[in-house]
Length: 361
Image (cartoon, rainbow, N blue to C red):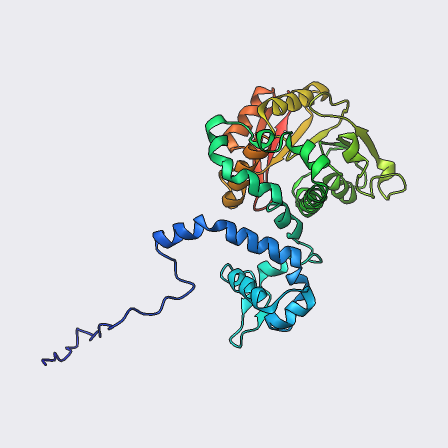
C-alpha cells in the first residue's frame, strides 16, 4: 500500500467506508419529502388524536413515560408511544434520552389552558367531514365549485347544524378561540385618534369590538351579525356587561343591509365565502357610511405572508366546503376599489392577518 504524506498545504481526508448516519434534523431528499407530504394525513390524524386524547393536558413539567401518560388518558401504552414518536418527528413533544416525553412550544399549544391554545383549531381542521371532501379536491378544481352538497346532500352550514352537532360545537369554539387571540392584536394596531364610534360588521361575538372599547373608554360601538351569532355575544357587550352601556347590538345580515353609521367600520375574515357576497357587503358599507368614514378590512392572504402554508390550505378547504376563497393582496384591493373604497396602506396585524386601511369617498 502506498501512502502520501501531507504537505503544509494539504489536509488528509479519510474516505468513509459507509455512509454517515442521517440526522433527524437533516433535510430529506425530494423523493422522501414527497412521500412524507403524500402521507400528510397521518400527521393531521396524529395531531387530532393527541388533541382528542388530551395528551398535552395530561403532560406536566416532569418527563414521563408513555405508560404513565397512558394511565392518565385511558389509552394503551404501546400505541400511545407510537403516536408520541410520530408527533416528535414534527416537533410536537420531545423524547428524552431515557425514553420519556416532555413538552415543546408546539405541544403546549394543544393544551386547553394555554392562552394561545390551538386545540380547537386543530380539531376543526381535522373534523370527520374533512376526510370526506379532501379526496375530491380534483373535482372541485375541475368545476371551481364546492363538492359539499354533492357529498353530503346539503350545504355546508346546513349539514353542520343539522347533522353534525359535535362538529358545530368545535367550529364555534375554534372561531371563538381564533377571534379572542387576534382581537388584542387588532386593538394594539389600530389608531383610533378622532374616532368616536366603531362598527364591527359581521363581527361574530364581538371580541375585536370589546378589545377596542376596553382600550378606548370614550369610544362607542356597534356589533352587527346574524341573529343567532349576536345572541351569543361576548358577555362584556351584553346587558349587564361592563361595556354594555357603550354598545348597540344589531342582528342582521351585512350582505343584505348595514343600518349602521360610524366613524370606523371593521370587517374581519368575512370576505372569503364567494365573490358576490363580498361585493354586496362592501357596497353596503359604502352605502351606509358617510363620506370620509374609515373602513379597515382584515383578512388572511394567500400571498405575501409568512403563514402561506396554512392560508393556502384553508383556501383549498374553503373551495371544498363553500366554494369560497382566501384573497391575494391584489384580489382584495380589486374588490375594495370596485366597491368604491379608496384603498390606503396595508399593515400586518400578526403572522397571518393583514389590515387594509380604506376610506369612503
